[in-house]
Image (tube, rainbow, N blue to C red; front, side):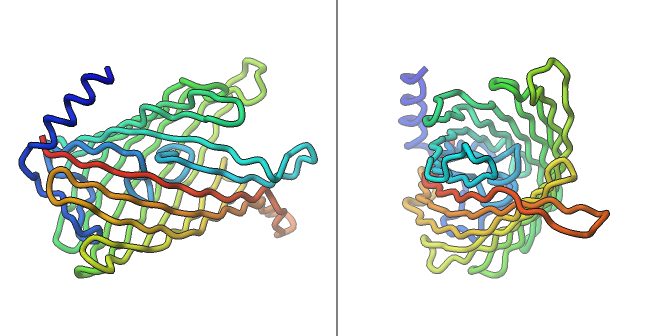
Length: 276
């Protein structure tokens, strides 16, 4: 498998450029046709880097501060997610997170995920699409998950780019191990604003709300930076980002918020694009 992967990269390196834009702010919601992308970093900083389904790409370091006195606030969780994506047509892209791994603590293979994104509106200034996601039961206690979302990308001249969307997730799992299947419904509302300072260097910030089981609200805020090497095929993005999360539970009866766990997350990785 590894040998075939290396041969594929070698063949792709000599392929003709398929139109992947060098400038981050000018890229479309879906890749050009016959374009392969290897994701060792988040594909974007919105719907493909947020929620319970669709996030986890790249090399990640997590810090967690919970309410349980047994929690170790200094413990750092190290994970990675490696994915592949392919442009079928200029408006249709499919992808998979194939190697979701937790290195520490308790090494494990996490949940495999698939997605399909269709851009049904494509203009010079904006793209609007629909995105379907699926989480397969390769890790417990999660049994199955699916999602449907509406990604939007707005290009502001040659400099600015706004990614936003809304996604509904449904998760099936046995949280307490009693054999009964629990069903959770989540709503994900991410947003990312990026600026291409030069043709190859970009930076920006991201913000989001994640409503878990229509009960607990998690707020995310952070920043990202990236640099692009190459032009056409191959095209490589080096990127890093940082997020902080805060969570709470709102009780409608008394109209108050109760504090929840807080955590931080540092992400680093690369994206590689090849025209086939």
